[in-house]
Image (cartoon, rainbow, N blue to C red; front, side):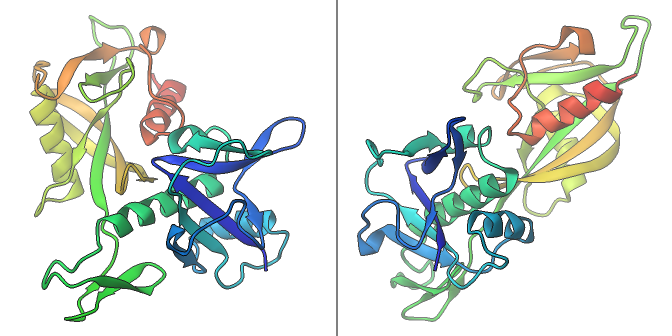
Length: 282
């Protein structure tokens, strides 16, 4: 039976290059695209996210996804020099894979990361073993364990036209941990005991010193770097001057549609939030 092979090594994924146009896809076949050792196979997935069902079925030229349809593989070394295949950074694969395939690759990356960090029971220290395709059980005390998500919020803050600025403006910041010189949105992790909306208010206040209002849900995105869920919001500026938290941000300010700095790539929900504003700004 054909299977989809999600083969990763240190943040890179093995992709098949197809046709003269150089289109990429996840490898599919009854056998793995490269030689594997037993320990390379982390888990197999038969229960797929609903959004991935149709696309994986297309890949497999099948009307249904059967048992053990997707094999999650952790490679010991990058697979290089294989005709028709290429290792690509997972983030970069967003630009060449369908959304369903990219999300599936991200799920595989998260499971590999979780497997590496859940070898032993946190209660008694005994080895953990796989119980289902996405859970483990302690071999001694029986404690069950599932992958944990780190939930983060990200917010697009805007303010309406003012005498100083004749059009609506968006708050953009450059975080010190950004690898590239682009400006993004205020974001941060949700703390224990707070709602998503409370986290949005706190992060904006901590990082910029400003108060916001009219917080509204925008959308969410799995963020497998390494195991996150980004929850996006929009909000309106209420009051306060801009005072950057220098331990987190190196620069920031208000920008209009006509003077935007470099912004994140299309793989992120930050870009979706910004693009949506650019299209609808007053």
